[in-house]
Length: 329
Ligand SMILES: NC(=O)c1ccc[n+]([C@@H]2O[C@H](COP(=O)([O-])OP(=O)(O)OC[C@H]3O[C@@H](n4cnc5c(N)ncnc54)[C@H](OP(=O)(O)O)[C@@H]3O)[C@@H](O)[C@H]2O)c1
Image 1 (cartoon, rainbow, N blue to C red):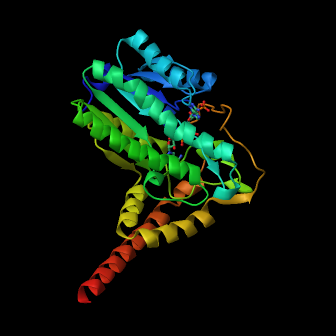
Image 2 (cartoon, helix red, strand yellow):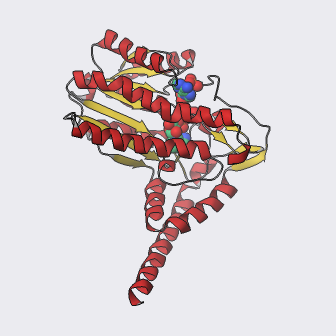
């Protein structure tokens, strides 16, 4: 079910709002006149995003919150309720990553990625549900990634957490329907690679500079997808054509595409030698910056989309040939 009220009258909580897609989504909603409740750890960056939202026409509230702290996330919801009297939508967007081979990522970093990306999302949904129910319905949007459906090497905790987010969303959706609370929609967004500061924020155990694997899409592509989901909720939505294509290829020929993406991830994610770092895993580091500054990788969009298109055609032909061989046997 869509929002109970129009976006102009809606109160929307956004986690991870101090940077990248979270900030872009806050701006997109502010342009609709929505009230946005902005949460992340970096208070000055949240205040900067809030200022811009007000210029664009939205009402704002800043609530510094670490999503791994379930009590703090409950307080975030209570503060929004106390200020605006209702919550219409909740966007779980906060995220961290650590890049490296599975057996070279320290266990504490692996755990932290799961705590922020998966348990932080669970904390958000748990805090939101009673208020959405009390308001007669609403929408939860979990910003996952196409890596909730496919895998990419050097990102094992991120992939595992995002696959978990997708499974969690599917289960909660079933439970809400089974218990007569179908007026609350649970949506999962599966973006392709997006031009945000994420790749600079991520912890790094690879020994090389981390680069976004192309094709890279602007953050607004995801923000617009989220706004569309608030108007017309769906189970899942891809953001960026490459995500839809890779998802389709993975479903058609998982073993083949797993191999191809393994190779692709090995050769496109890394630049010059770089020291290890824990990035923003354990300390806030946001600067209210929407874009990551990877325009060169954006320009590869057309070329790489064409390559993915050819690969899709190849996958379809290969799958059809395999099916035909099987039927002839
Ligand atoms: N960029 C991509 O290529 C891409 C692709 C697919 C999906 N996504 C997803 O898009 C979402 C946004 O990522 P982004 O690309 O915009 O990255 P980003 O610029 O690094 O933003 C991540 C946000 O999460 C916040 N955050 C991190 N740890 C937190 C914690 N413990 N508690 C609360 N907030 C926390 C950060 O702010 P503080 O440091 O202030 O806490 C920041 O606002 C994530 O869910 C990501 O997985 C990104």
